[in-house]
Image (cartoon, rainbow, N blue to C red; front, side):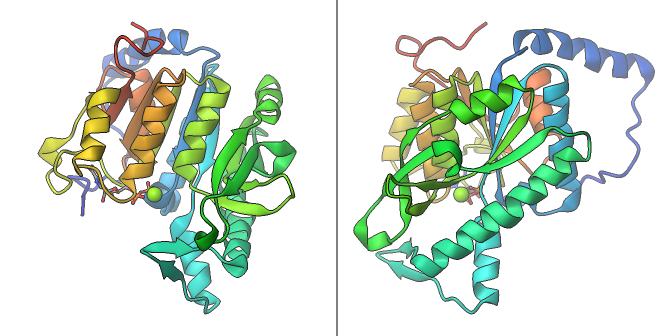
Amino acid sequence: MSQVSEPIDMDAPVRVDAPARAGVLVEALPYIRRFRDAVIVVKYGGHAMETPALARCFADDIVLMRSVGLRPVVVHGGGPQIGALMSRLGLVPEFRDGLRVTDADTLDVARMVLVGKVNRDIVSSINVHGPLAVGLSGEDAGLLLASARHADLGFVGDVEAVNPSILHRLLAEELVPVVSTIGADASGQAYNINADTAAGAIAEALGAAKVVYLTDIDGLRLDVADPRTLVSRVVASELRARIRDGTIEGGMIPKVTACLHAVEHGVGSAHILDGRVPHVVLLELFTDTGVGTMVAPDPDTGPGIGP
Ligand code: ADP
Ligand code: MG
């Protein structure tokens, strides 16, 4: 299991002298100019959401992005929170060939937890700073059209299409959309969609400058147990080889698959970052510090990754 090297006391005052503070702001300036008006999709979930201090940092980061003219869109998961309510309700998860089956009761719980609780918590933590965030489900205004992944898996959905018009409207009003990844098919049947996959599809539909995945590890590693094997930059063809050779497993698979698809369909770059590190999104966006793993298109196929 990965660990942050040193515990960080987020309430301790940061002791940085005045020139260094000014330097940080000056360093941010070219990035702020470059990303002005850019859509940045941030997938938030799991461990980065678990402590109130980290949730506050995340809200600060989103509000700061919005305040300097970027257009953040939050897409969230909530697997652990769904599991916790299922066990409180005495619902036993059913697995078929190692995959969790989403029956009607499980779908109800997932939808209640994601749309009714996790989404609300994120929206209210952002709105402590001002009336900025609007929560919505993929069912709203036809945002996520879903189809059943497999008849045996019940209501697990794939993204059939994204209709981003509601997001464009909210962004035009300078609001911050916060999306739960429940989709609906043409008949109105709801499906639970993997949040990593949905975040990539939404980034593509919006032509986002970046899609950023906050997770519980410092990025993609060649050996998941060894932090020294962190990959700071990878191009699409190499990433594909790493999926084939089994370097990438479990929950990292939908993330890197979504990153690959996104950078090959018009998203400038995709990033996998350690959501347990306070303000990691700001480090990635506004500083020269390289953090996490950046996925870029192959030089000759992609639309270019900028200077
Ligand atoms: P999230 O809640 O962010 O979706 P997941 O648990 O689904 O988190 O996915 C992240 C996990 O993927 C990591 O904690 C790690 O155990 C696993 N993983 C598998 N292969 C790799 C790899 N090559 N590099 C980094 N993490 C990996
Ligand atoms: Mg996951």
